Length: 303
Image (cartoon, rainbow, N blue to C red; front, side):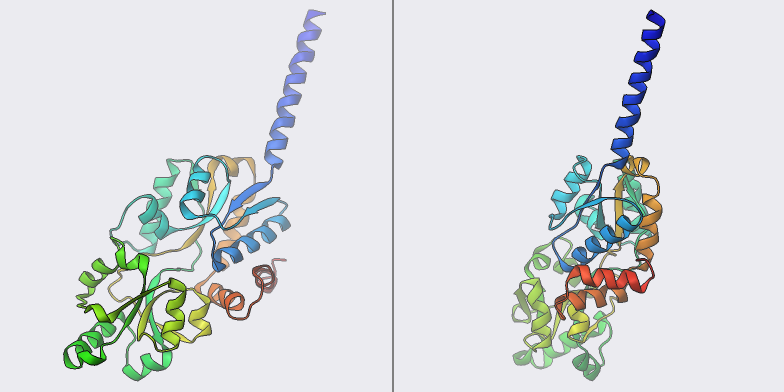
């Protein structure tokens, strides 16, 4: 009797463990994304794609960067779309120049110690850049940031009453890795009247409307295409790479076979051109992130 009771108890424990593991494996994936258009599109796209692959996803949108990071480390969320430059500079306080590949390998290695896995990065790079209206850039023969600096200095010395004006957001102006080191890298001397500080979202309109001659933008913002802006080449490679990448907790990947492969199948499709067009359709054409994401996936025969 005792032997039978022990066997029955052992079987009951094993069954309970099996059910617990099954329930854990089947638990919905909690995904956090940030509070701007590009991330809303990535959220919608990921939910649709993973659901087709058999995963249940609970999206948590409009999560601040540092809050999302802490939630990931504290196991309150399972995955997110993060940028290599954000992890490098904000999370790890590394400001030395790196190539896209070096930045990715660095953050991947650092986060592996914390139980976080950086999967394959998308080709898109949503970094900082300076931009002008295409018409103005072509008229002045400016295609690089060095050429812009030369023009700024020329006008500053020869015609100070008609100084060229740069549109900058408040954060970049005051950041330790922002305007001051940029000026040092490019030997950019500026007088106070040349700098116009404003909300980052207003810089695009200020460039388009001629309130500033050039401005600091994000390279994949939909208004770059919508307003026909010319993105100037960062020819001295000052700005870090911001390749967006799925970041998932290691224990989550272990409990969800096929998740890594599914995300790695999606990320290579997200290029500068594709995400800029999708951002434009939301911000300029006023379509929903869900519709834009669905159309994109259908165009890739993924839905």
